[in-house]
Image 1: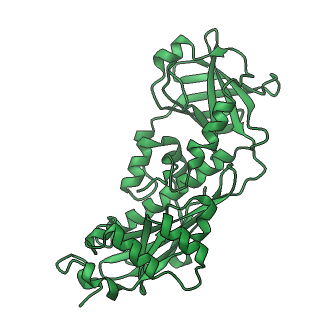
Image 2 (image 1 turned 45 degrees about the vertical axis):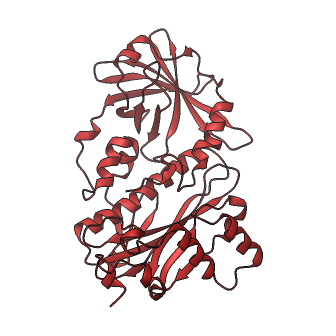
Image 3 (image 1 turned 90 degrees about the horizontal axis):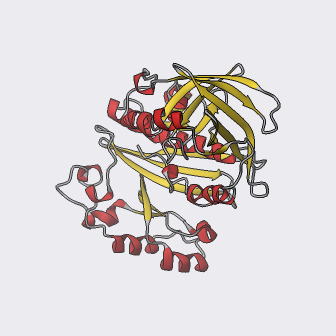
Length: 378
């Protein structure tokens, strides 16, 4: 599974997570409205394990909280979410005597930056924490009860897949949100993940491995969609993440898809990206271009791409693509191999036209002894 590079920063061209979001954090580094002094109390630093997960309530509302590792035992990964909404809220640790204070902060758009929306004041008990939530001015106080949650011991509510198992370890909060029944639609042709709303195709009669691979593709987009929602915080410009994924080619051994995502996650402007997917129908594994056309070098790809651009591409864009368009994502259609540029700057992103290379024109680049040769050539 590719956890869409919000993972830390690409396919959700999440330059946001390295750019605007981190810039905002740096800009608001001195934000402190919940009292106390920086860092966790000694008992928390000594007892809180990296990535420890807690489940409980704020008032009557169910929440899940994660405490990460830092110099004081709690750090940048401290966050929680209300189960009803599934949107992460960042937490910054402070201490007052033996109490752990977690300052709740949300992004409120470029004009307002990061805002403090609440203060959790917690004290340890035998199974976790008890304490209060209140606004920064001390009003609206609610009781808080949190107990340790063993995420690794929780049963899977989705079919087992490599990506789901990896997510449980790498991002347990995302796992807890997404580990639930998903809804088949259109007679099983698509599946909808209910919390993020991400819809993804399925293949009739697919092997278990291929079904798992398609689930993992969808899982990656669902993680990105939820991360996007969390980055928006309380911003008024809450557009979020929209995916259109479609099966574009099937054969006896291969299935290919094209994924087009558009998003606005609190940055300077909306953006989008295209990802091509080619999977082996039996194993569900991604098939690299070299497994089909090993002689299709980077230079050859660029030359054939430029030679097969749609006629309507104007001169200005052709010049841009000649100078900058050197990296591509690939998918298959009955018409041929589709190449879409992925390395263009945002300002000329509209020039990222897809070119189709007919299979017959690529026969000289194919491996006649390869596992997929007969899918295209006789």
